[in-house]
Image (tube, rainbow, N blue to C red; front, top):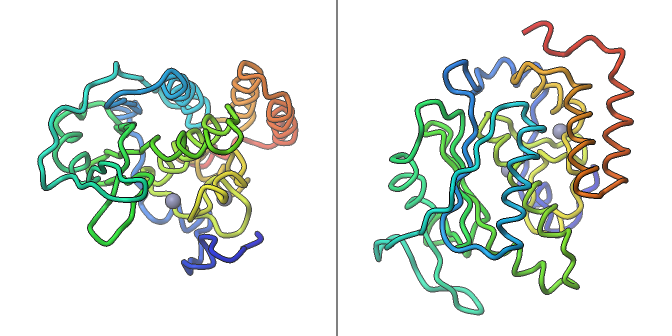
Length: 265
Ligand SMILES: [Zn+2]
Ligand SMILES: [Zn+2]
């Protein structure tokens, strides 16, 4: 994988994780009783944002082969003073991720949730020394929060490309959900599970995992890679991205003759 100045691997030294290391790490995984991924939008969203949230539900189903439920939008309500600040340029109200992860989301967590993910339109920060963060998750509480705030901000500036918001949202949602299933950053390939420091890096990443990370998922979620690739191809048919649809159909063909990676689970 190529690493440029300012990229994730330029500033964070990581050694990655092999398939064997992942399965040996006792990862947090869906169980028979807890296998649904919930998506809870919180706040006020534009039409473009509600559309990409709905698309994330569909992509998530195909990507992780788990039931995914998109819940109706909830208002943010009043945030305590010590859980927010006004910061940045231009100035904006930011909400501390801890407010979602510790106060709000655990109370809303359904019993059968493998992961409970909140999408917010608010900008987020994890602690006083940080300028902002795109999202954060708590593995042990099975909750995570991701912000669409900067994705659409910058999408508008960048030639108003309507696909950019969709692609960024899908990549960030799938990447962070991977972390919620204990997946570590991928360092070997250009992979959806590679770490990113900035949006240009997110934009360069593919909309899928590399073969090794895919094998981890196939083991974790117990699915057949070929069927997953076909579902992802269908998603891109619907969202009119023939190049992606073709790429996933080619991958489906390439793995058609392999025994399911899940056979040994
Ligand atoms: Zn990450
Ligand atoms: Zn990977």
